[in-house]
Amino acid sequence: MDVSGNPLVSGFVKTDGKRVVNGDGQEILLQGVGLGSWLLPEGYMWKLPEQGDRPRRIECIIRDLIGEEKAAAFWETYYERYITEADIRQIAAEGFNSIRVPINARLIMEEGQQPPFVYHEDHLKLIDRVIDWCRTHSLYVILDLHGAPGGQTGANIDDSERDLPELFTDRLNAERIVALWRMLAERYKDEWIVAGYDLLNEPLPDWFSEYYDRVMPLYKEITAAIREVDKRHMIILEGVHWSTDWSIFNEKFDDNLMLQFHKYWNNPDTESIQKYLDMRDEWNVPIFMGEGGENNPQWYTGAFRLFEDHNISWNFWTWKKMSTTNSPFSIRMPEGWYKLAAYLEGGEKPSPAEAESILEEYLDCLPLEACDAYPNISRSLFRRLPVQIPAEFYGYRGEGVSYHVEEKASQDIGFRISDGVPMRMITGKTEKPSYAPEGGKPWIEDNLVCV
Image (cartoon, rainbow, N blue to C red; front, side):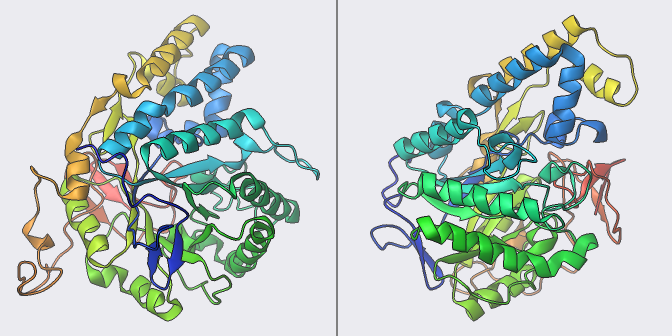
């Protein structure tokens, strides 16, 4: 199914009450996919243990294995190959109309500098290029600051240096994020294919809740800086605690706002998202399920249908990762990859030549044409035949519109599920290991899914 040239992808998008509309005033539901692990490599997508769970640790181990010069060359090739025009073309062909680009501030902004801040033009051009491809293939682009200066979560997903949310404890980091977003807004203010600015991914898990009252003031400060140079792009705000807690939203301070939540592990029913629907009514703004996935196709079928039935834009996580069956594409694991993971956990160190060979094979596995395709994933998201729809996912719109269900299931149906392997859920934990996928979200351990 090739839908490139989507007529609804036209002109600057903006909010119109609870709707998102395009430049022609037509309502559009964003149906996108995230480019996870491209500009912010995540250790769980690399199948690495805690010692390699975030970009700075992955970078360190690669320097250790093959040396500074070859490591630098490795990363430039990685960025070039991980996402190419072939990926963007295929994303459009599979029916998506948007992408979310997770950005690591450290990639494009010199770390720890006092003003005037220094930016890496060569890496900004990677973003420029993907925007150009998206304009060609009719995909809106959401710019997502996934790793903020100093770290906004104090976990692996933001590339934190000391497992602390130093964005909220060091004023220089706040100044740096404001300057960074102002620079991006100045750079892309005339780019209609950019749908909006996702200011901060998943700030502050609940164990750093003492800083919750600092999030909205920072959002307002960033937005004010953006609005100095860019009046047109949507501002997208995420709640705290993995973007699930919207209690911080106490003031609608801009007339082009969209609120974002993330959803991974709980049952896909209206009850589980009611608080977000209520906030949509209260603020009269559109809402966005900006990140959800890492489950099985049957869950996708129910969850993403739920979002659309409630007129909620969505973005699937993620487009491709290593050795998986629950993303549209899977990067093949190089022979000998286990040796790198074993070394991180205290095993024998591969020789420089062996490590270089393994890493070169990995780079060869990155382009889309070298990956394994799982078309059933996109079919599940868009409910295109052939697709499996579990019975408990019928009935969202009631008698005479969709199938009727007398009672909701009396028990959880079990999330998250790793690559199609059913696992049960353990609840009640508050401490998470830093190598858990997406920080505090469930991780896999001994055939259990834990939270």
